[in-house]
Length: 148
Ligand code: SF4
Image (cartoon, rainbow, N blue to C red; front, side):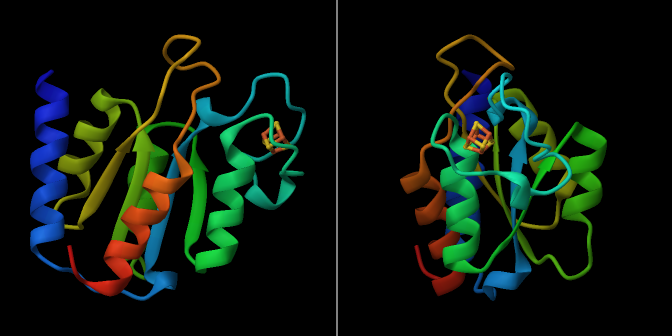
């Protein structure tokens, strides 16, 4: 509940700031639990490994990366996620994760703006989670246009 509140407040604040950045300055940061456990593709190494078979959210999110021209990667853990957000060319982040990890990431990445998108957990936490592509697109586009 507290996580939801912090995420909502953070997202409202980031949108209120009307940050305008180029697509290549936006990092789409994804958790490894989005990757279907039975998939043999090494998407942790590169999203280009994904064959977009539609069995998990990684395919649609990789297509979003290519369509909008943002940077995207899967982080294996909090330390790797933070290292990615601290890359100097990255000016804003759209992060997908569970509530707890999003809140940790928002504080760790500060002052870099993070728009947080909660994943869905139909099989329970940390396993074959899902991300809503429309919500991710909306978050990216709001950073690109600099308006709410
Ligand atoms: S969309 Fe298919 S190929 Fe891509 S990561 Fe998911 S299961 Fe693997």
